[in-house]
Length: 324
Ligand SMILES: [Zn+2]
Image (cartoon, rainbow, N blue to C red; front, side, top):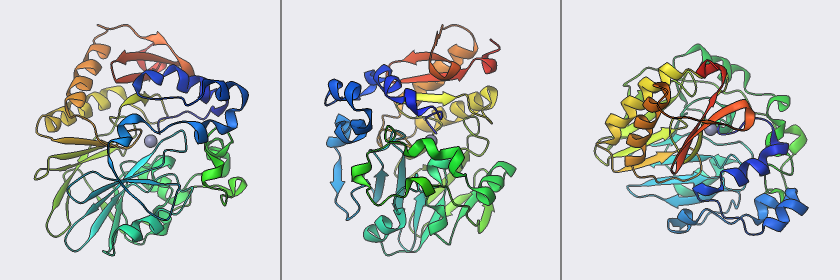
């Protein structure tokens, strides 16, 4: 989750963070008709440099990010969530299933006929929306994961994701916004830190990286040097203020991620941009250490959080977590 549920402030918020690659097609339209913002907004420039794969579902933008990996982006909703399909020899892994606004399984079927296993980077609602469409699901063995799988999220909890300000409705006219929920899902197997997912010809290591959420994980593939970071790192404001966020735990995780990043060739996060230089994760680790050591000063930002800006990324941290 890169948002808090206060969507009537989202456009102002986006303008504030526009330094990290947002381009507004028309600042005027933001002021006069917020409901058109996600339709009028241009794609992030870095996306235009990627190899796009056309599918029949216009809600999703699919990018071939090399080594038989597809980034399945949802750029018309302010979460800008990205799921990944990793193709192996005899099966494929779907790392996250997105918002659940449109059917991700239909896109996946256009990209591969292999059997699909689902695993979530964590079980915030913006990454598990399509889990219920699949029958083989791995999940971390935590009580947090089990509760989210069992309960899903109610319309009341996520209704702000489907307001006219939150997404481009003309991209998804068939969406029943009033009935939008995150459906529960059934886990086939619970796994632990360091579990290896074997896709036949490729092996992915699960790395527990709690902090942003109690069940947050990364995936690392040594052979390709691909590191999937979920919401533990992405370009943009990294949110550390939700229920379940823990700073000390996050510090340990970002430290572990930085070590992997030093061996990685590509970082593939769960929001905003699907391909990031691994050096950014190493920078984030250093930056986060400076925050906890009180060597850098943040500024009060939106959502009652303190913002610490470091170039292409920032940390937004809950005041109470900082002891303020
Ligand atoms: Zn997220």
